Length: 383
Image 1: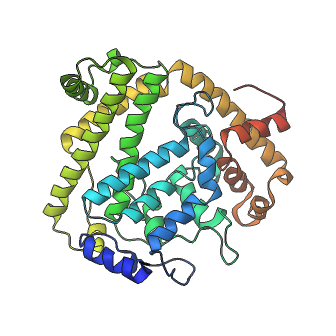
Image 2: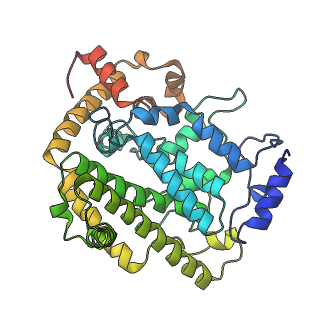
């Protein structure tokens, strides 16, 4: 039996919690389009993100370890897919709109620079006199302006609700800022879930990759509450597990504990707030999707550990430093010779300025494409 969009919207209305964002109640798109006969609005958004060039390029962008240095290490794309998976799990448990949550999760890193957070820091440094660079803002810029898929408008023309989620995508301990005339202090619960799922995901997979790459050890982790409690649980059920098998199952347990904590804490917070609609959610002074205080403290300790022992590990830092040197050199090369920019990028020089156009071009590059560009401009070099 064929299900029409109207039937899908009716099912959403019956199934979702009153404070969920329904597709039929979307604020719409910047450029009016006729509705799809068989897909709800956020389903369309999810498909548009998946079919974008920016999404495909995530496969060749660094997460923490330079892309290509290990077959099993996460890339920006695999990270994004994991965020989407965890987002759907939490959204389903809370009776929220899974399609909206997933669309935001899939789009949240579209604007990330090559070479991971190190590349982002370099672009921000280079762009400081010209407005700076921040990958969340760049993700929004990509879906609103840079992607070219449709003849009648720039960007992907995503719904207001997905773009809201990208504007408000921040770290769990930072309060989102209002922008674009948006007076709401908080985004939808679906957007809040995508935001927190990002945290859960990179904690777990950075531990996994760090252990797999022998940059951190279980012995170093043994004093961390997040690791210790899950390790004890796994050993209680599987006392014979050792090595990589044990580590993998402990990390699985860590993810499960994180997700369960968010679901339980958020359920209590939503109930205590008494919200009855998505706009009541948006008027809340603080996000309702959150960790318990105990889990938040444990995660902050884990974050400190990762920065001290993994993200700035000499083997990681040395490769990242060389990659960032390449990024600086290519940036200056394009500024000196803007004729080398692609046609569509060059068109934005008049409206956005040379440096912003160059930043757009470089931030969209994959790791390997930027290395190739450096070889063309500056001669071959190793990373």
